[in-house]
Image (cartoon, rainbow, N blue to C red; front, side, top):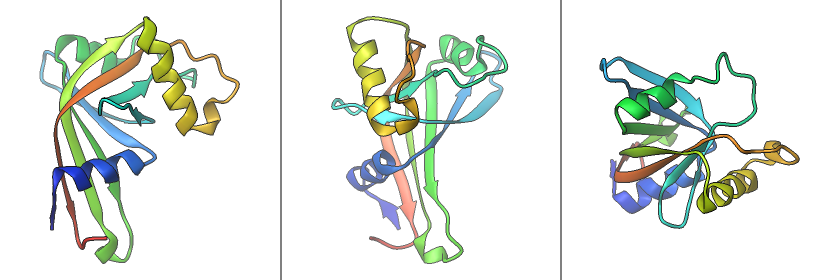
Length: 141
């Protein structure tokens, strides 16, 4: 069953992890799992935290600079297929390096993920302005 936008957004917000899909100027797709929060304006916030990374020159950031159109997917899988659902949010991303909202966005992420407790979080934040929420569920809740 197709989810309406409000139900899709609600399921998305409650998820623990999303998959961020970006594409660079060359059109090559790139998908990575990310932690995230959603702010009061409905923007999706993805922080670049202090976990070890292969490089600080992350492909997802380079892709967004070249092409700000992104898709994000959250889903729930179960062997009981009647529990299956997925939600996709499409939008336009910007990369926030500093400013008044930067600290507030990290606080929203810190509030959602206890793993961030005690960490200094100053890295970039990807801010996605969602243009559409779509989803599907085998059955309604």
